[in-house]
Length: 398
Image (cartoon, rainbow, N blue to C red; front, side, top):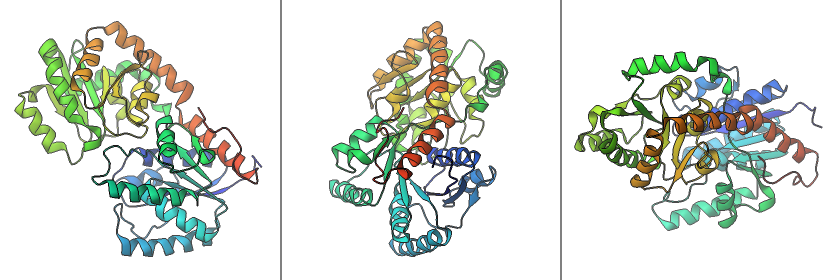
């Protein structure tokens, strides 16, 4: 059964290009290398479809579905997806993210798909909904959808705990598979050249400590706490430290205003969305992710792959990616003083910075590559397809 070639559909609906898009692309590539026939249905978020096309992944037309809720058009897409899934007779439909999971799992079950998987990419309920009523509705819907799903893949122990605590899914349906990244762009022999290239671009000399943060500029990433922490760090270290924000999003103007009000503009640089992340990660000295809500952040893995230590917060899977005191530091969310203290431990100790970076690189190669992620998910599929109950296999996979 393990050698059987499968016909697989991934369904992805988002509001912005993000980690889920990259994870689906990497998983699809792995499955294609194993000889499976893979299709992706993804909505027209800028860059998302191009991400699949340029890697030779077959795209199916989604008829223009939107990332946000639109009841009338969503009903149309439900029936359209049912027709598409019936026509292709997929062995596996694997839905990704909330909206795709809602419409896609309904469509797959109605169409008679034999095996339905769902990846949640972070339940992240804390602070997500403005009303407790809306949160309860969301949880009720997820409970119903879990009854239509054979296996639910969560990206962290934190997500698994949330699913069990809120009774979103029974324990026997949950599998933990950590995200993985493509490590081919992080060869050590390229470190020095790319580091110098990036630092020349931003005008940073070798003596300066460049602190970077990579991620969409939205409320969940909580960049304002990094700005507040930066004020404390700069009081102690002055012009020897610079901060680089890589990404774009709705909070950019408010963040810029916050920096200007504190009189810190000369210490900050905004680089917008970039595709040369390996080069940027090599050019910075540490990566900081101050999120108040997370799934399993890819940026932390990319920093470790580049041999860069991270400071992050104890939310979602962040504390499972960064090993406290070994590859970086983990502090409580919403705590600029804690962020500043952890940052200064590294700023004041270049030897520790180098050691943690080296540890992080080893951690990535042993645990968080795309190959490891793909193999574990396909092992889950094989276990599902060789067991009539569909519930065998390890429940926590790392």
